[in-house]
Image (cartoon, rainbow, N blue to C red; front, side):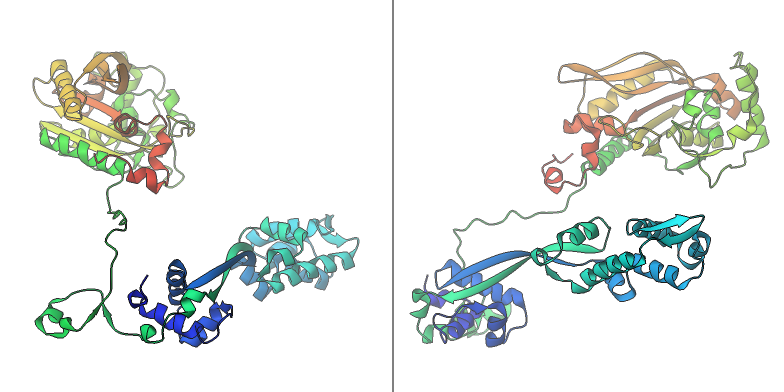
Length: 494
């Protein structure tokens, strides 16, 4: 490579190194001699000179142990076990009760555990040590270790290092790289005239072209044959992109979007949908019940209406579920288990107005995390309420939606849900197999009549994550939420 193509930092570094032929230059020496402050300039210049053979670079790496945030506090204020041991030593009858009044709860428990391993025991509620000198020596050794950092890992006591590694936030190990540069015969032969620093232009601007300065300017060379890096542009997460796609399809089909609260009552979440109060879904293992708010007051006319429906069917002609309905159970606060809780409230507020509404939002169920289940997921919900709405309209709407999603082969089969009759399960054909994606049906009179709704209500719901797995070709639902940027970059644009 021609020396004229060198960058100014490379010229300066090579000129300085020529003053001491055969010397191994450290980073500190380069920074001082070149009058630089930024290490990155020196490392970059050394890398450039090494690439063209003017200097040779030697790198050595070593593990350095240094204090983390909690370790820095311990160095300044003392280790937790040292502070508690000092308090024990200065107290006449150091008891556990007194310890908890002198130290925070998050310190007292761990501190006692640390001291027990040093020989301090709790007898009759009072701290005692069979060998106080051994406790002192153990704490002094730990304190000396903390005070000695940072240091090379090989110079430290192995047992103490393992001990502090087991304690969160006290120490951390980092790899330190040391570089030295030495001049090669090729670098020594570069003439001093070629190493004179000069202003080079890397960008042609309109101001430069408007004058004659460009004629005598020195331009920085660029190797146009080198491969360029692929630019990384921002993009939506696949889940968010799918939500927007679903949303646009429903809006295109004439639906309006509905957004509402996560926190609901058991009444609206289950009772309004004719789910019996002794249904398994009402148990703690399926539903996140809340401590705050533990209960949310509901209008008495609603709980009375739901109670009549559940106990004997009210005026609907149904026999209900029997048993005793509890208004207190109905007012329990919870995280919604499905988005139907919000659409049914919308219908209750507009019982006479025809509507087509949808929602794509989060729901919560106490599920064990595995390849097909998450405790927090998204549900797609749709409702049509109008005169003449029937099963054929429901099936046609579902087929239209899935066709727009790219799945023209759709079939439905009979199913059972407490709040719809007839009820359907929706399946689409994917890779030659039929996959179930959701449920649908027409709301039962036990759901609509207590709310003053007299027209048919078509309803359907499906899990968005399951649809995402289908669209993205995944076999594990957890892949949707892993922090893998490479995987995210390689996903198709939905």
